[in-house]
Image 1 (tube, rainbow, N blue to C red):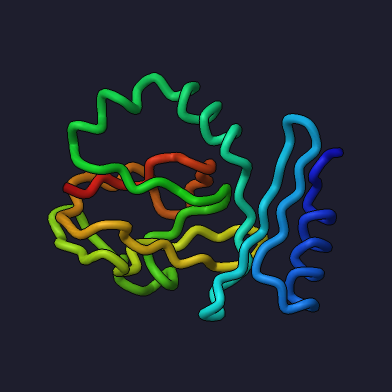
Image 2: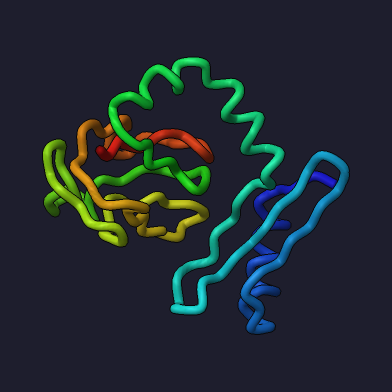
Length: 145
């Protein structure tokens, strides 16, 4: 089974039309999970856990950089945006302190703007991606210490 965009969009429609909060499918080494948060957040497509391990293992530079603080990673494939609109101020800057739950950026996936929240409190020590840059699932977006 190959997961193409049209198939994922159909699954998202089934999720929305039937008031479901999650759909998971597996076929051999491929898997997909679509989740919708109950608070009205957008539908999010996330690869299966076994794919997470493959992404982590293929990034040899990551363990060195962990010393900068805790990494905040992208929960999906998409486009990184540091601000809510092109003419707005960025959500966060290096040196700024954030609290758990603060919106720190947006990752656009399938024309949905997904607000990414800080998973923990701390100070932004590095922003690893540029505005408008494509990001991969599990890619480090920024470090917080």
